[in-house]
Length: 588
Ligand code: OXD
Ligand code: MN
Image (cartoon, rainbow, N blue to C red):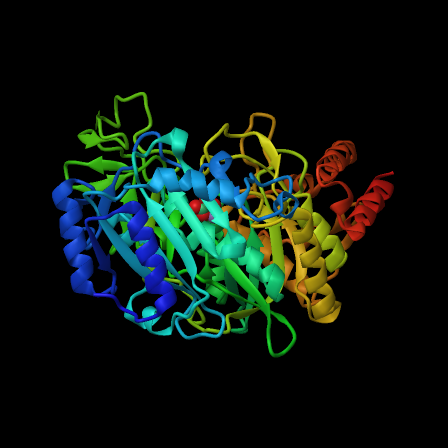
């Protein structure tokens, strides 16, 4: 039975059902009995496998098609009326043409199948900052993931208005040649077809909370960012918040759930996780920037997650979690992935569904972009402010990426405008989270390259405008970090993980004017002695090396930035061009 009498909602569902022709339509109320029922159905068809319910209660395993394991950026479109509004970094097609193309792909795609109607909220239901959507899908896997990642059910249906975000997903034939992830920002509409991979089909996440939301934020004076949010509690008990934007699979989840090194823990330092992937940022009543996490769960990368790198994430996945494309350990009906421990199972099934022996097999057992979908409430360090509808006030914004050489461990912007420049020139080596070559350096401004729902240069201007509206005094301070510098043999130099807190401590001190910074051509930096190395076997000389700025490499970098900016022509905000000129001059 329909959960709403809202005509706009019902008419749209009728229209989509007439096109896709499902055998039946089922509304998702999000109740436990309905979830149990869907889990049982999915297990009966093999879409899910129930894991060991003693060791992993309410946990399930899913495998996607082998050709469908990551976001597909080359098949992701922003279809606004004017091509120039999508900008040079987005794929574009005329909306009418795209609607016509999709109509053919959706025609009868749900014949013999069920269409599930998921009313969901991004943000706490009823909060003035929440936004609502409906996803129609023919996948139980999608329904169950959405029930973890968002707030789903009657409470949402009760408050949904006419301006909800419409999302249609059909698995169709999982045909990579006809796979499309399409956004119509001017129509509040998302259409996804021929995929079953999370980032392409959990429409509340990248599609709504970043691409559509960034477009809405531009029009409405707020921001949707690819950022984790964390609270850093100092020994005085004060909690200070930061947002950090890193490209996919660069450690946002690990940083958001960081466990302080022993020397810090003893003194009372603690990290609280507010979010690991997306931040919606607004000007609060006090005139500062406040950030909230619109999601309700974590869709994290499994490989590399272990007791050392992220024990909090590991514990988060011990119940109510869906694992995708990991190894199935048949001895105890649990899961495994590369980097979990040094004990791969011998009697196992790999992510492709083939028999796998971790001791003898030459191939990886889990896909490098295999995932866990876990409820936020499971996280041992979830922030007490996680459900605060107002979010948390930001004192710092941190940009970062994987750079083997150029970027130092940390540096700070002179001011907001310089910080926006720093965000606009972000670059990182590519990872397995998106289809394509891994390890290639690409520019990824604010980690939003694949997620900005409009022209990237207008997005930079929006950042500058938000800064003007708030004023330097109340703005968070902006920083850049790089945990990934390597030595001559290609090994990471900085230990990372919990020890990143040593850098966050300096960042927060700078944000509160509690320590000074040293001027360098690229911004303010700490002296090596300003970073607390207590309890860490790491020499000051090595740290000095990590903080070093190689002027020649940076001159090369400036050339690359000029080339990158040229893509955007006249649209690059003058303020950023000035920042680039100033950097060039400082480098000499
Ligand atoms: C993600 C991504 O899944 O960025 O968060 O790809
Ligand atoms: Mn992400």
